[in-house]
Image 1 (cartoon, helix red, strand yellow):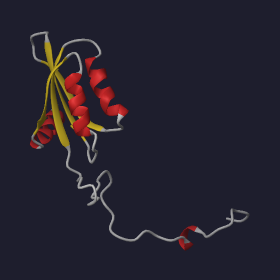
Image 2 (image 1 turned 90 degrees about the horizontal axis):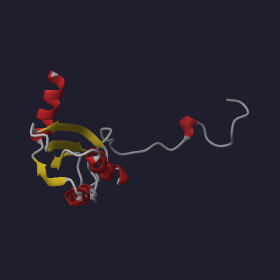
Image 3 (image 1 turned 90 degrees about the vertical axis):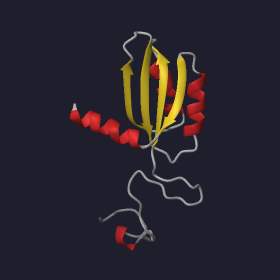
Image 4 (image 1 turned 30 degrees about the vertical axis):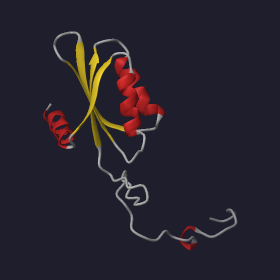
Length: 126
């Protein structure tokens, strides 16, 4: 480029050293977090806005929801919402505790990671 800005060209700049991680993972040994995902399950009352309230807690803390499945239990009173979220994020446990405090939430629990694989399999079969 002629007439560009002063400074080194792209190939003259310092390049990062060390190993690279896969996109979306964090292998920072100082924090101890890994790329392992967290599966949260919530039993909620069938009321308008409950899903928005729950997902809003994740959004406020900039936590990405990788997958979400919501289904009615057939009694027109309760629904079951399953979230797969991407840590490493220290706020996941805090969000889980805050979900429990929402008015229309009955229970929240963390599920084994293999549940996330089954959710993906069910979505792919549809």
